[in-house]
Amino acid sequence: MDRIDHQHWADTSTTVEVMALGVRASRLRRYLGQPTVGNLLASLGLGQPPPASVRTVPKYITAILQSCFADHLAGNLRKLHAQARVLDFIVALADHLARDTGREARRIRVVRRLREELDRLEGAVPCLDALARRYGLSERSMNALFRQQYGQSIHAYATGQ
Image (tube, rainbow, N blue to C red; front, side, top):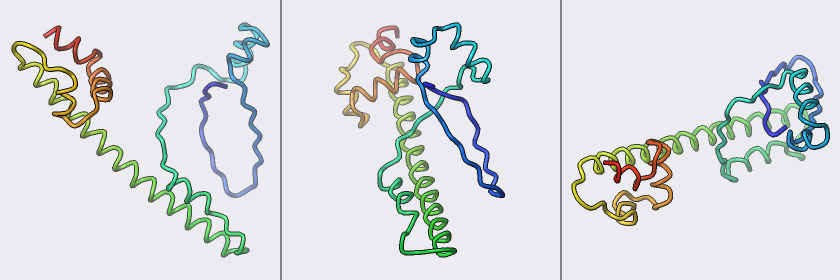
């Protein structure tokens, strides 16, 4: 599937084996045809998936998970080591996301200040390069953030004002 709506369930009282098969919906449509694929997905309860947000996790954080299983340990020590590494991973991930959220909040504040400046502007609009340097962002990311916040490019907004 291109995307799939699912929930994670964890019941540690029994061992459960899960097998997953991934096939792109576009490829299924090509092989089976749209009506058949539509019926198949509806029968499986796979409707339109919800939007998803994907964040990149740095390698130094994912490396923590890769070090969970220590071959030199056995039994309860091996379990305890794996649990400790998973907790290390959760702490590192939470710290990373907290810093990432703070950075995003800062960027949103910058874009709001830029809009306020454009609202007060009289005369010629400064070039995008000068604005980007003033606000400490690249031209591309500043324009993308502005478009994300206000639905139009900086130039279109300033021209409309």
